[in-house]
Structure formats: structure tokens, C-alpha cells
Length: 96
Image 1: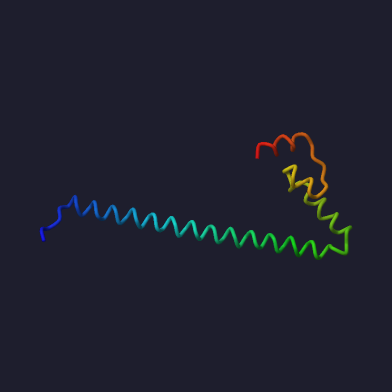
Image 2: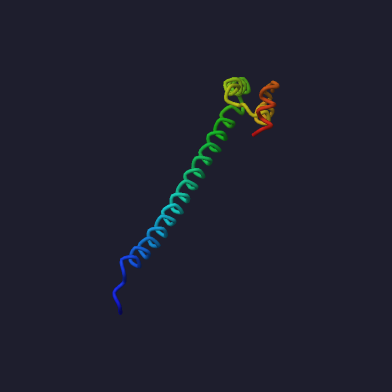
């Protein structure tokens, strides 16, 4: 078997490097997806906990919704909680 040239060796190593970089990117993407899934599940459970906690105490639930007033900016979200929608929020919500 003839000895490979430097160019051939570099080409092979470059291909292996590219394959490894693609594999690393794929694994990192899977890791981010799993982290996002876990974070979303935590948000759902926290929301369910708060709704259950305040189920028999509407005044406390109303206090929580008032506290969320600055946090909720999308008109659809504000409507869900019965919060007023001003014209600036309505316009910004349409572009999202």
C-alpha cells in the first residue's frame, strides 16, 4: 500500500473533524431541547400548584394576577387573565 501524501492525510482528518463537529452540534442541540422540555414542565407544574393553592381563595388569585400585570405583555395572555389591553400592547402583540 503506497504511503498517503500530506494532502490526503489532511483531507481525511478534515473530514473526520467536520463529522465530529457535526456530532457535537447534534448532541448539544439534543441537550438544549431536553433542558427546554424540563424547564417547560417546571413552569406547568408551578402554574398548576398556584392554581390549586388559590382555588379556594379567589382574593389571593386576584392579587397574583395584579402582580402579573407588568409581566404579561401579549394581548392574548392579558385577555386570558382578564387584564386590560391598551393600544400599544395590541400593536406590539400583532408583530409577535
